[in-house]
Length: 360
Image (cartoon, rainbow, N blue to C red; front, side, top):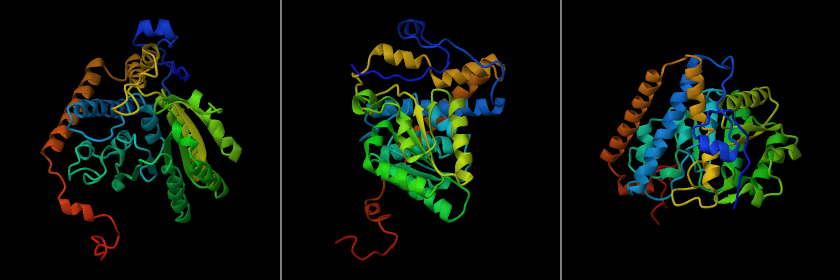
């Protein structure tokens, strides 16, 4: 049986039996909160929106209203929320195909994301991309990408453009733990360091490349060390803790904007669902899953908010209800939207709108 070893987060243990069986940490909270009340409430709302949206997407997939591939982000929300708060709205984002949460956190309408999952014309990719190919130029989300590792050199290229144009912005480039086996990653790392590109490379290490554990696929299991061979500043991050994510990304961003080049961050995280909706996840034990659920990043933030009287249970419940309504609104919007016209097959293929050979 595969197993993963990830760090303790200090989050509240929601399942005492799992705690006893696996050694998950008890609930802890800092004596003094590290961030403002507004920041903790923002994180809570962002991550709850990601969680509730993904849970609804999973239900709709089971009802066959969403077709094709569908990779959910449930459990990994802090990887995005902590980074958004550490960067600016002008920075660029690119990721792989587990890509619903990123645009949600950046401000893309849930309506447009749900409509894309339904393959409707009102979707953020006009219904042509589906779950794996979300894009939103308005929020600088440069897309989810279905080819494993392909986004890594593209992320470096986006960073090159930012440096060339002297914008002062950076690119944050996400990848899964399986993508680090791709040769393109090493080529991109070498060029990014050589040219000191303003890029933050993030490995979302949820322990399993599809269904195979990191321990069975690599001699190097501390994946951040891959950056050290390029003299790239590299570090592991407990990504079950949104504060740790924010601080690590902020440090990397400061280096990038100072012209010091890229950083590699290994976000040690965990997904509660399978690799995709077709994955029953039989390669891990129930105890392992419950262990990580007991460290849930959203519950940790909720615990901090309540412990330090930043909001009441009633106020947090009101946020939950508002998000529930927002998600249902996105479903209604998607249901009532039209499918793309067949002529859309021939649009957005070439920059030249009247390209003469497109139908030959």
